[in-house]
Image (cartoon, rainbow, N blue to C red; front, top):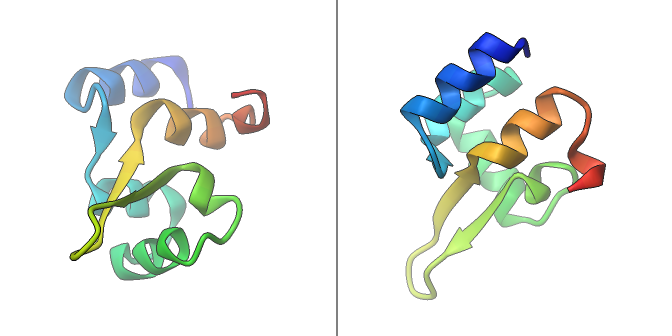
Amino acid sequence: MNQREADMLREKHPNFVPLNVAADYLGMSPRKLSELIAAGRKPYADLGGNIGTKQKYIRVYTARLIAYLNGTLAGM
């Protein structure tokens, strides 16, 4: 991911990236990404987490997504 695209993503989504946007960057469906995060599968579980106890709500953190796409997630 180039710097301009990363800055644009940070500007549009400062904290959390919508699941469908993150899934597009990762080349999979939002449902599959949600399942991988909920199951705790690495490296996708490092991108976000489950929020809530009764109903699962997946969040994908912007900074972690950008780091993963740039190959620097391990340093976070």
